[in-house]
Amino acid sequence: MAQYLLTIYQPDGGEPPVEVLEPIMRDLDAVNREMREAGAWVFAGGLHPPETATVARPSGDEVLLTDGPYLEGKEHVGGFTVVEAPDLDAALEWGRKLARAITLPIEVRPLQGGPGC
Image 1 (cartoon, rainbow, N blue to C red):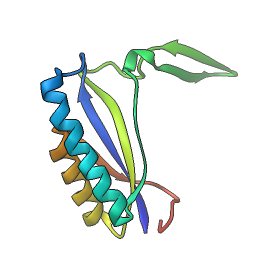
Image 2: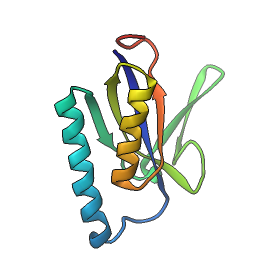
Image 3: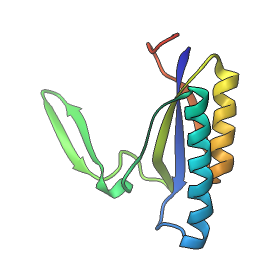
Image 4: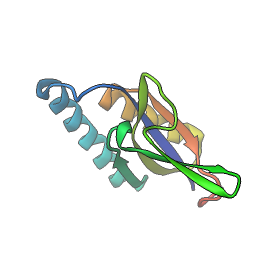
C-alpha cells in the first residue's frame, strides 16, 4: 500500500474558543481511532505556530537561518497525518473524513518512495 500525507491548513490567529474546539477535538479523536482500527494510520502530529519556525536556506557555500515561516500567508500548515491506503481514492476518503472532523482544508498527496510506491 502507498502512503499519503494529509496536510492540515489552518488560518493564522489564535486558537478557537473551547466551545468550538472541544467538539472538533472529539471528532478528530474519532477519525484517528477509525484510521487506527482500519490499519491506515501511520503517524500524525500537530505543529507549533508558524512564528516558531526557522528556515534554513542555502546561499552559496553557506546556509542562512531566518526566523519565522518560509512563506507569509493567511493560513499555515497546522499539522499532518500519514496514512497507508490502497489507492488515491481511499486516501481521499480519509482526507474527506479528516476535513469534516476538523472543519479545515486538507491536502492529500502521495509520498515518494514509501511502501507501495
